[in-house]
Amino acid sequence: QVQLVESGGGLVQAGGSLRLSCVASGRYAMGWFRQASGKEREFVAAISWSGGRIYYTDSVKGRFTISRDNAKNTVYLQMNSLKPEDTAVYYCAASTDNSGSYSISRYGYWGQGTQVTVSS
Image (tube, rainbow, N blue to C red; front, side, top):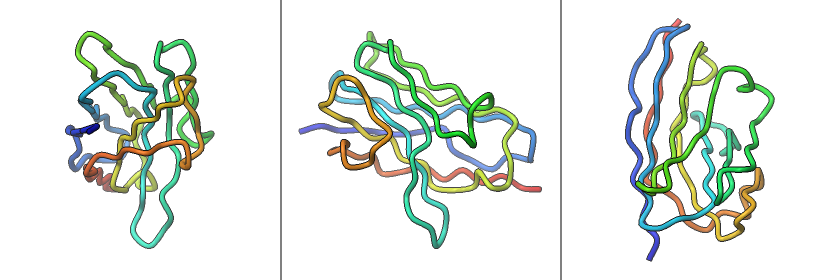
């Protein structure tokens, strides 16, 4: 069974930074998604099994960086220049599609989520 454990969320002022981590029980293509209160879950970033392919949603390009450490089965999301509209519960997800994807339907395994709150 695939297990994903996220950490690193918290409260930060606008313009600040946070780094999210997700430890997986194996090696998979990984994605980060977020869900703001009252909204649908949306794609944020993804990285392929090898790390060679990376995807971002337009609203975070240039501010967020996804990376992975395969020796630790860990994927990271470095979030800089945070904005109040980045406030959401952030979820990591694992996909058996090694190329990675921005499509939520490609992800069959999900972490419990970690809250990120950005104050103005």
